[in-house]
Picture 1 (tube, rainbow, N blue to C red):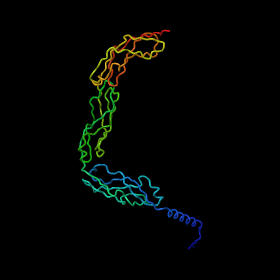
Picture 2 (tube, rainbow, N blue to C red; picture 1 turned 135 degrees about the horizontal axis):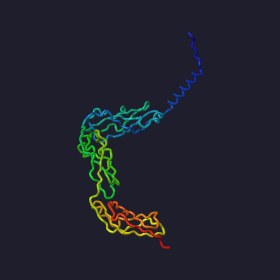
Picture 3 (cartoon, helix red, strand yellow; picture 1 turned 180 degrees about the vertical axis):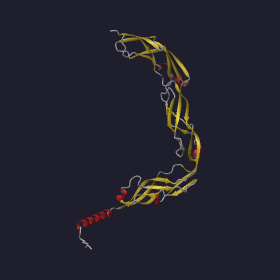
Picture 4 (cartoon, rainbow, N blue to C red; picture 1 turned 90 degrees about the vertical axis):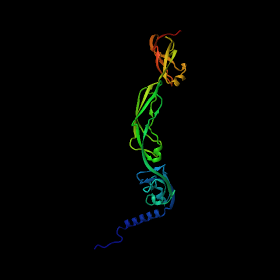
Length: 308
């Protein structure tokens, strides 16, 4: 049998002893402190056929104790309060929240939870079919209006507390943009619910079709002068005929708001030199009514050198 030499590897043994003493001094030298935290409240084991009525609290306040070093390392999500609702039934119920229901890292002791109990109301779960309510955003091009709006699917099933399901009248969609549209608009959009206690059973999106139709009324503005735009310097020009008739389309209220001077007819003479030209007449539309046609659609423009 080989003899055991107590002083063999004495250097390593002394180093290990020194490190152990240093570690003990480091740990023993830390203060025991308390700290208040606001932590998330996690709900588990909700029984089938029962719904929460209203929003439960999202957080609770806890007081924790431990060594200062351990508490300084506690980050968001390291401490979580857990509420078990497996015993929930319809009506108003009170659930205690104790330190034992709080998950915390090793070395962190939970000494208090506030509030110590949470009141919640429960209702029987219900399901009902409600119509999808499409929404639009913006205005079509001047002279056009929003026509019939259809949705596919036309209805969806909603789920939630019985009283909230009874109150619900429809399921709105996110708005379909129709700004400047002159023809049918079709979009796949998300279906939402106004009441946060409700949820959709299956369908999450709908295909919404918005018909864009010409406005039903027209109004003619007679003998509007033709403006000469972008004439080069040192040139003169005249249009023949010098006036045109402009026809607008829109709803009655919009057409009634249009003043004759709101509609400007013009021809564009940019980069044209002396000579005669047949040019298309343009008209600036009103924000409330669209220009359907100009009569005559073209005019003769004569450009000459200016006087010296």
